[in-house]
Image (cartoon, rainbow, N blue to C red; front, side, top):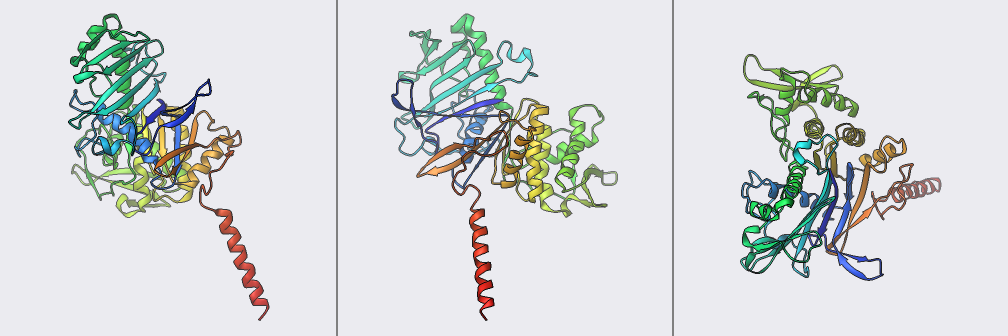
Length: 449
């Protein structure tokens, strides 16, 4: 689970002014605590999506087939989440010096395999990026940290990297062969240089990679349903940015021979949550004759209908619910506008889905939303003690000129926000006052006739 996201001069997220213990003012990176359920709210084009994109940029770099790449800014539509353009497109406007930073802290779940990360249960990754004279984006400095160890790779002249350990002032070595791979790992030559420290460096890099590989992303534009689907008896590896793999996941769940594994239970759990949202009683899959094609059938109010023939809200929320149970324990699910095309009650129930699944399955949710109903239900869950303040973090993102600003929405034990941003969800009281004013004016006008 990601416990903190760090940014500096990344798109709209400029460095921030900080005051140290001596009272000195300086500019540093933005450190954003993350919780099992983290919700981002705010106006359009405020910078919410850029926070999500920072993690997605690191993931598409970590899974890049090119080990030598420093930062995969995209361009391969089949494999990349986004095409970020070039270094100057990512760098905050007028940033000085011309560097940006991306980083995160993480904690491995209790269920993590000991053989995967050996001694490592938490760690930190931080990379500073610069641009070469040829226009390439490169790692200027890489820092990998565990509870007990700290390693750095610092770019020097002509592309050579110095390898530093802990607080040591002298590098263990310097070479072009020590250039980081995919931002997150030191190459085998650097690991061999570190000798006894080598296994720990590998542990940290492996854990960083596992966290990034564990990200599942669902965008705001989801694929419309088809009337029927083929199934080749396989389970998808991912559900896709637009939820294109959702039906395959549901087919694998419904038609699985084993009824004991998590995959077999997905379709039942999806049906439970559709019922709680009031949009359907259950879904099932039916084979079309003796073919290899199947239809998805939605049951509600005693009527069965093809998924294609019901309201668009069902097909749009299916990927959200399915991903909540498809993602393995320890994964991080990033969602943009999960509430799209849902009525207010169903939007509110999404908050319950995120809180319950994060608690029961150790799946983290980072959600960008415009839904007041989702937010209000989360407040209610905190008031009921169904979701603790430690389990849920909420942020309001707003614009200050060209820069994005982050305001934590602190909830008390009754789920109340201590300090509301202006016009947070519009001006409901103002609308009520205006309606009352117009009503009294009409009444006065009518009585005078």
